Length: 113
Length: 113
Image 1 (spheres, rainbow over the protein chains, first blue to last red):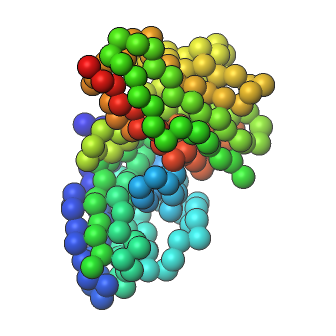
Image 2: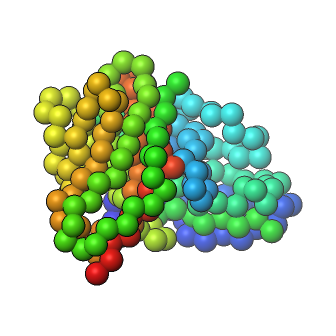
Image 3: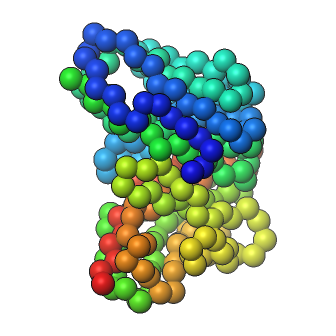
């Protein structure tokens, strides 16, 4: 295991539901990321946090709302999603930026019905 | 803007043969380059990285990669592939003074026995 834990592993939600994805890192890292992975497409960087401050919001629709209450935890709050939002959502952390590699969680497989 | 291209969607090799997965990148300034592997239903796992120095980088599980600045390439190689190397491989780049870690679309490697 990489030290980055995501819950739940699978989530099915209706378009009117509200749910949250949780990520926890046990590595003492300062940076955390949310990525969206869709088949045959590059990973899409959604949000980046450094020391609990958001440094990137990569034109993500407002129906996705991140929260970073401390350097070990990252949430992605979901509401009124669309079927095209179905994907694997990956959380990652790194010590810092530059040449530091990111460590990924196993992802949450989200299906919007 | 930075980007990564993995020109091959799929690479098929016989076990024991050399394996090469291609990657080219575009970034302003000096790059940090990474390779990751993803097994089914798992997150991305770090293989190796180039920061500076020797152009040939060695990583986990017998993999290596060669940085070529003039060709802006960072191809992943393994001298003798194993069936267990069958997976999805991602190349990633980060600019010297940036926080964004940008990924390619991935290359599916299949090693046949």
